[in-house]
Amino acid sequence: MLKRSLFMIAALLMICAVAVSAAGQEEAEYPDSAIDFLIPFGAGGSADVMGRTLANEAEKHMGAAFVPVNQVGGSGAVMYQNLINSAADGYTVGWNSTSILTTTAFGNVPFEYDAFEHIARIGYTSMPIAVRADSPYDSLDDLVEHAKDNPGIRIGNASTGSGTHLVPVALAAAAGVEFNHVPLGADRRIASLLGGEVDAVCVPLPEIAPHVQSGDAKLLGFPTLVRDEQFTDVPTFQEAGYDVVIELFRGISVPKGTQEDRIAKLVDAFENAAYSDEFLGTAASFGFVVDFMGAEEFADYLADQNEVIVRSMELGGLID
Image 1 (spheres, one colour):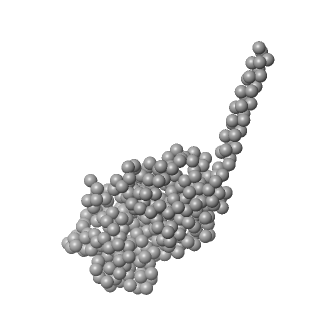
Image 2 (cartoon, rainbow, N blue to C red):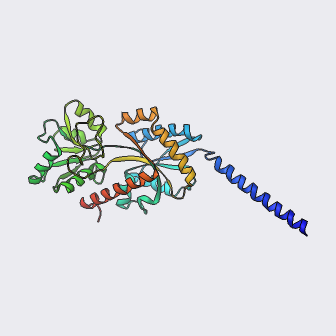
């Protein structure tokens, strides 16, 4: 009986050892197949090109391929819905953006922005306020002072509820003035400014930069934490006395519950990819500032940005 008991104990110990070994082997093998890289933007655009470049560079540090999958629709809602429904196993990641905050604030999806593990911010594109070169406004203060007695100043944006709309809404609130917000569509913003249809525009820097360099337009301020390296003479909103920071950021998200060691490996791969020569070159060509944040710092940043965006939407009458 004793020998039989000892035999059973030995057998159980062996089974446990094999199980532990198998688990360790499975963990060590991640990733052992391709990882889906979900992109909520159409193929060929700047966000798509940057995402694909980032994924290609991250492959070199993951030991597995990233497969770009464009999932367009609902201002990001389609991709975010598919991401939240994916297995939390590290084999599906999402190329997120400020849309994770605007989409959830609008209620376009049945969850909040923090329903994911947002594991890294890669960087951002600034959205400055710009005017024509012959405009009487040479600074944000000039614009604000005029708006105090003339609330009809027309500021163009891409669309209602977009980042380029929320920036001047937040500026107006911070300055205690009113603007006339004009949704123009992404293709008409610059033409509308230069043609005199609007007095100013809020626009991603890459779109207006060539016109500033040519002498047709001028920048009044950046709603970013730091000045732009290309236009160091233009202050941030905060430096001008208006506490507004809204950035068109991009980062990486995974489903809630993804294992910490797998997240750590993904973060390491994307950080290395973000600072690779290939991605830095691509980012620079699109006016994208690489400014990496890990999961903890990104979480704090998202909370701050969400508060600003929700408040701006409320002030703009977009949500209750």
